[in-house]
Structures are given as structure tokens and as C-alpha cells.
Image (cartoon, rainbow, N blue to C red; front, side):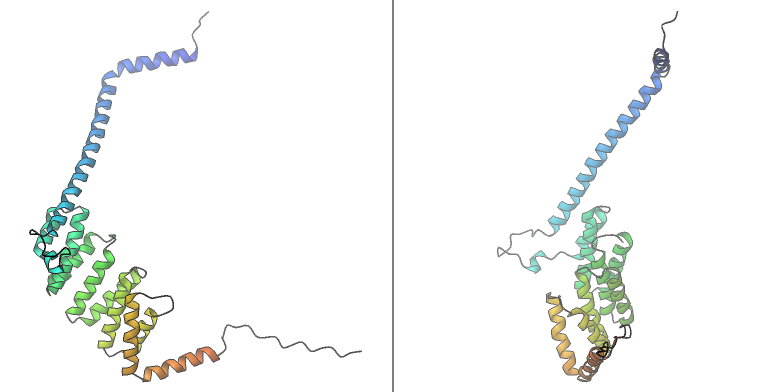
Length: 257
């Protein structure tokens, strides 16, 4: 009578398979080990690349000579757009390279080189559409159009920013710039609407305070807007809502019997 069980047959088959495929198993193990090592080296290299890129960007903003005062001036900390573009090119694919490209675009704008600045802002948005700095780049793109006198293009840019990034801090700056643009285009009513949006209850930022001051100046310049606004408010307060349900008349008391 045989004492062998199905389990013993399975173990024997497994050992036979392992013996016959020893070379294959060894090759697979070596390949897996190599993949692990490559992944570890890649991670280490990526960290080193990021570190080198960050150091390059930091070095660009570190004065070569000690500043005259404990707090360096903006002029002492200014970095040329050429330097920033070189960092962006040399360290492409890193977060520091990404920031360098945006900073270069901003520096070009500050230097009055609106065409190249526009090109770099657009390049940033094409390369990094999901970047946390995308709203800033969109603002720069609209501002360059504004500075170049392309009013319609700038207005489209500001509206695009407000549609895509309505709650980001840069959005209020876009609203303020949009209001200034509308005012320059002699559209006071539309300008007032933007200021009203910015000065609504609950907004107390420096930008909204500036909007409030400019709103008062606009109303002084265009007193007819005060009348229009008063009529609109009066109608809103006194006119019954079209959606309000009808009020049931008071019940008439039944005559006493």
C-alpha cells in the first residue's frame, strides 16, 4: 500500500521544476536585483540633480560681495534674465529650473523687454500647465499684452486667469489690472462692476482696499454711476421677487353664532 499523498506529489513536482529551471530562476533574480539597484541609483541621482539645481539658483541670488547693510537691497539681489535663463536651460526638468524660467520671464518684464518676456511666460505655461505657479505665469502673459498696448488680448488674458484660477491670490491683482484696462478703454460701468466685486463684504486685502479707493475716485469722475447704482439698489429693494410665493390673505373670522 502506497503512503504517498497528493501533497507529497506536489512537493516532488515543485522540486523537479526548480531543478530543471534553476538557470531561469537565477537570471530572473539577477534581473530583479538590477532593477532595484537602478531604481535606487535613479532616485539618488534625481535628488542630487535637484540639489545641484537649487544650489545654482540660490547662488545666483547670493551677492558675490558682502552687502553694505544687514538687509541687502533689491538692486543687490537682482539677477539678470540671462543668468536665470541659463539656469533654466542647464537644469531643465528640475523644480529649480522651472522656477528659474518663471523668474527670468519676470525679470525680462521688469527690464521692459515685453516681447521676450511674453515668449518665456508662454513657454512656461506650455511646459508646466499644472505648475502651482501657472496662475502667476498667466498673469505675466496678460500683463505683457497690456504693457504692449494690446488691450483686447490683455482683457482676454485676465478673463482667462479669473476663469481658471478664481480663488488664487493673484486673481485679485488680475481683477485690479482688468479694472484699470477697462477704465482706460472708457468703460466706467464695467470698471465699477469689477471694483464692486473686489470690495464686497469679507474682503480686506491690500488689493481690495486699493480697489475701494479707486472706486471712490471713479464715482467722483463719473457721478452718473452713483445715480444708476441708486436706482438699481432701489429697484432691488422695493420690487417684489418674481419667484416669491403669493401671500395668502388673512383668514376672515367666522361670524359668531
